[in-house]
Image (cartoon, rainbow over all chains, first blue to last red; front, side, top):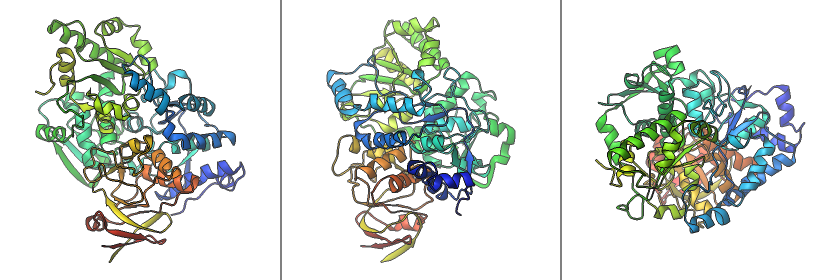
Length: 429
Length: 147
């Protein structure tokens, strides 16, 4: 199928607004043709979101491309948020790491942030992978068509908010925001939002979000799962706590597989509204019990140079923590330290959250408690921080399955992490 | 010789040695270290991909079911095309996914790189092809496998 363009879209493709705009539209048309899209549809969300937030020297060709767009007068038609920044002086790092970060890796950070400003980034507080949280304010409505990229944000917007967005790549998302339209295919269509898999959760206790998401992502890859049995623990309301769980769950499905949308029975909007009508005929079934989760966890490779090393750094918050999660973690750490007769965490620990969430958190009494426990609170992207060979020598632990997937960080469940950082002992049961 | 018919995403022709990923190919995890630190052989950095981990990818006929992982994937493919570190071609057994399609199309529209991309070659293709086999990609989406 070849896409049918409106006369206005065709004129853009034919060069009415210059060669650069014609190439932007050509890119979107080819992108749509690859998925048999019949037409372009307008982007209807108030804001966009870009996954690219880092000025890496290795990505010089990208910034050159963006400069070509800016020089042609092309900017985003909507303001947008961006993924977290890669650097924060408050996060522990060695002198060598500082040199690598500033002199070798992120040498284009200033250049790139200046470009983002020209393209239309909302502001200095807009650098987070969780722009959809209320404190940040980039929260689409159900049915909104988005031109976003960032796997964890896309899966959240589709699944928890009911917005419509494909798993766009970086660059493509900005081009959709520049053009103001995107090809209609996949998760933008009713049919593309139907479930290919039924996932039956039969665990004996509430499964760890990031482990459950990992198992499902590895099994269904880019398909849409309809998850049964989770409402037993999560209930039927999208509370702050539940949204935090779904954020982490979705990020793991998207990074360990390629899930762009999931439905949770009795909980997420389309599952509530349409129920089992969302499930395709002949959908496959995946049963997850305690043994399956244990099998998945045991399959993760340990890629530390010394697998028996004592943890040297802990990251919690990939994707960025919600306000509720920050509060809950603070309380858990306080309780565990008190129980163990300690005042500070025994492993250097960094919590990451968006600047607006950090600002709200700092208004609460929990902020002082967290600081007293020795935990650093940062807006950084832990993935970007760890994206260098030096980190392989460092025994970094995390409760994030996304961070585990892309770096040498070792995954532990949240209870294991809590035990390690409040006792200094190995986290395995 | 055995032939497989696929669908052309980015046209072109080439002959190259096969490198096969049986599971989803995580583009960011596979390329991030190689492009950041100038690995001339572009060895795969994805520790979760037992088929490819530490194997050179430059100039190979990359055979895969689909790509997975972060939505930086297309940007990464664009970058490897722009700096000339791309595979000789990408051959998908399944329908191409949105991230790989973006990367392949960005490479085709915005760079001079030649990287034919064919999808829908079928499960039989991925079951048949092995590392080291010689693959010839034709303009019409036919892939010839020898060796």
